[in-house]
Image (cartoon, rainbow, N blue to C red):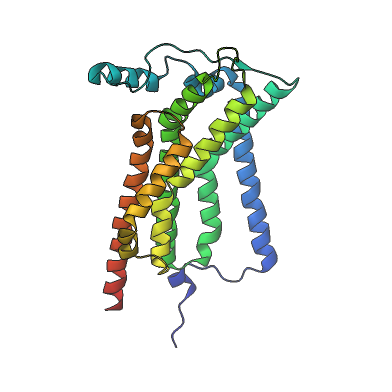
Length: 276
């Protein structure tokens, strides 16, 4: 039986459990400092931060403007071009300060996330073989890009349409909508996180295919079932009454499914070539 050297595997030798624990502590300290610095910067730029966060509540947001142009060109009732107004309120004494702190921390984690991933990868990479490092790098970079893509899509399309519909919806003219700042921000953060996770589907499918849990044949066989599930999820995410908005949300999710099939098929082919 042949034994691989530390240089071939990329593993470090001679470190005790307490040395590994000390190294982990240093990584966590660096991560905490990075998040703190980014959060402090975000806290200081309050006007710019909340101008970005609250932009979808204004009728001149870029998404409403572009959809209004589509509405004028197609003469289809995609979205009402009329201006709308949703006033946010604060119901707690310290709520606005708490929301400012939460927004700053979320922004700090988001801005420091590339550094956090690099530090975590540097900590675990010595225990990985060279091939495992390649897979881990692909997963980390691909997963990060896909999560950002989902977050951007949510901010630019899904959340604005959802907020406009729910924020202006009335069961009666006698009932006035009074949306709290806390409700607005919690909904935005929750939907952004969910869409980021949804966009991880190709990465998860690739990982399951590597472990042999998923095949392209299985995904193709149940494509119709996946389409129905995607439409249901899209309807839940955007409870609007028009088909255009539903398809706008469902189309990227369906494309993710098709991309996942191609990735899994390529993985199956590579596995067959290695076993041949």
